[in-house]
Amino acid sequence: MVVVAVLLLPFVGGLLLIMDRIEDRVSAPAPARGRPARHRGHLRLIPGGRRTAGAAAAREAREERDAAAHAPGQDPGRRHAA
Image (cartoon, rainbow, N blue to C red; front, top):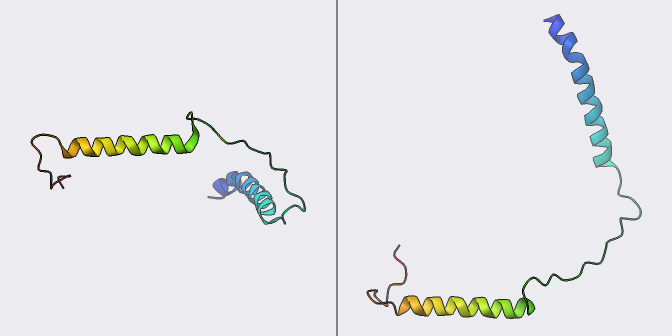
């Protein structure tokens, strides 16, 4: 039992040292001046930007909903089977 305790002593000492460093870093006061923020440009992943993409998605959803409502063999009063 004593041998195990002696063998674990360096591990416990290292853990204590690491936790002390982490605690100092976390509890340290914020620097007087923060890091400078870079200016980020707007991402334009879809041609036309947000308005065009939103309108296209809404139009597609509306067309799918209308096509599902007029599909043969379906009751127009029931949209989804729960």
